[in-house]
View 1 (cartoon, rainbow, N blue to C red):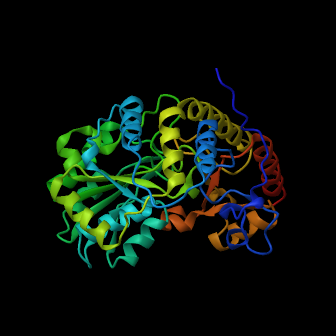
View 2: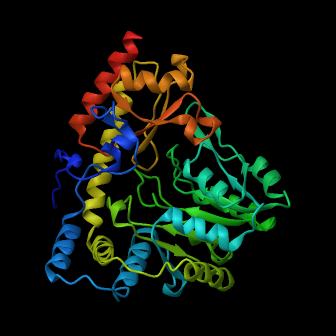
View 3: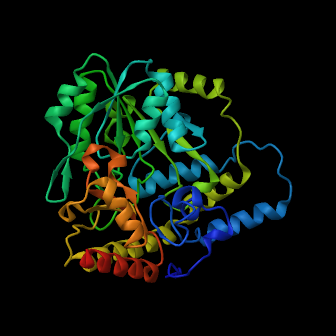
Length: 390
């Protein structure tokens, strides 16, 4: 079995890495443990690095078409890993997942329409709704002892609102780490279909799941679900390729796809990045062993967090998926205004404020565990020391 070194320390400050940049950490926080931006501190899979080097060695970087082997690499990956057979004709390109979702919102709803979200949820959902002139319709998740589930009764009420046109699904869910089960997605899909609500599903974390938790693409549930959906996916999280800037939009319904194609054309989203294409082909064709090894490493990191925080007032649990952990600081009794400075000044950590994910995130913070274990362990020791002394 091929071995990969996830313990390697790499100086990410040698490049303008966002997670380590002063625009995220602040000019006074450059020595903090950076755990807010959702990428990995691991090198991309060796097959990707080799493909990028080969493309670099070619030396010519003029305009390029989509490589003939890119879409087959993607569809082959989805079929083999997730039993999801996608018609290549249903796939559109996009620079990133948020761009894909934003274009779908514009193409398939009107200003003033309401979009359903399930907080605490990825903060950029709120931005793309507001920036496109739509309104948030909140369907909060139900939390019980750290476990989260969907509130289907409330969802049915919200979906019945005549102005509700789109459901923004996060599958798997960021930040709570749920990998939604097929029966949960099917019930959500039935409610949305009954009320004419389109499901736009952010599945950028699809495939980052632990143990027996199986990622189910929403559109794989059946033709009726697929035709009432737009799925946004990318290899960015799976293979740590966010800087390559590439994503896909899967739209099975012909009418919806034509509308989105028109939006793509209006915004001239039709250029291809040579390095992104080479990276994606290599990742989908040969990155499986690296991802499997990374998942084992990440799950062990998650268990380390739970073990080290077990005797503190911070509550945590191993997520079902993603490399993000949702930490509950509510027993510390701190307001969000107090919690973030405490983490920075006393624990030397930069986490993502829970309140950024909605009011339901009050008292929480999101921790990125995709880093070498030794560094994570040292950061947790500092956190435990700070909490014990408080």
